[in-house]
Length: 160
Length: 160
DNA sequence: TTGTTCATTAACAACCTGTGCAGACTGGTT
DNA sequence: AACCAGTCTGCACAGGTTGTTAATGAACAA
Ligand SMILES: [Mn+2]
Ligand SMILES: [Mn+2]
Ligand SMILES: [Zn+2]
Ligand SMILES: [Zn+2]
Image (cartoon, rainbow over all chains, first blue to last red; front, side):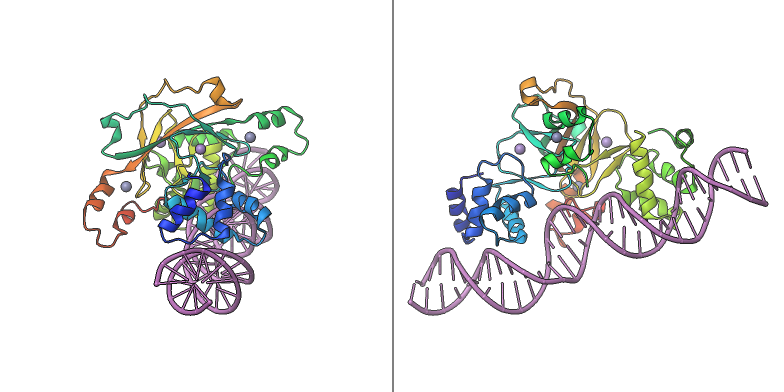
């Protein structure tokens, strides 16, 4: 994702207005590597701008995704996530809490032979590694007093 | 997935009853390589047994998944899909119509280095190839009369 | 500065996938 | 035949996301 100033330019170039709400969202996303959901972006921005609406957050995230400034990723964690990291990379997803971590390794050897491609015009290859994150391993090793402690930690359930 | 008779046994062995509804679902899934959604299983079974409820289809599919007879896969096509193919394999997903095709190539070289794994306990690796299927390429090359023709072909929209 | 256009908000409704629930029903067993 | 655990159905409902509408407000080009 471009930095907030560049996004401001890009929005103007598209005839979109640059509003305080949009700028607050740009700022919230800058440097965010957590693969936030719309709700979590809303939570972050609301802290600075309590009057912003969830609807506006959705709209702006969708605008950014349409402009290619953001990737819309669906990793089966129950809600769409938005990824400002435009570099080619893959993901590590915690099956307990839904946490998503970037994997920057390149897997260049990964190509589909023509016969396997079945006539498809290929556009992208996504690799998802699933497992249990360090935080959730701790919780699991304990006597699990309330059974919901691990999910509460990250704030999102894996599959609603 | 086991064949219907074996599933009947497996259900009984677990103390689960074998009902006509469940048998109809077993039969519908046998040899189905389309990665059906619950809705599409429901549609198929309803043709033979019009009184079956969607709720029962969901329940039975979940039971089968819990028993490991079916894989629950989420490929970002808007709804969960169920995969009776238990062999390790990957998927090719059409970004236009949502069609899913198996890729049986093995990518054994694919391993995550310890530093990339970030302390996760890894459990699974999924590879998703995205592109446009042969059918949808045809539609796209034409003058696209109604713009919705390509989606109607496969019966499911990629992202609701 | 002014005017036009676009954006935001709020309050809903609608949508879709999926699940919880209550009550009627039935498979498998005795 | 009778029993009971387990199942089916229909409906309500939840979560995530989008559509609508109207009223207010603000961005930015002229
Ligand atoms: Mn990422
Ligand atoms: Mn498959
Ligand atoms: Zn976790
Ligand atoms: Zn297609």
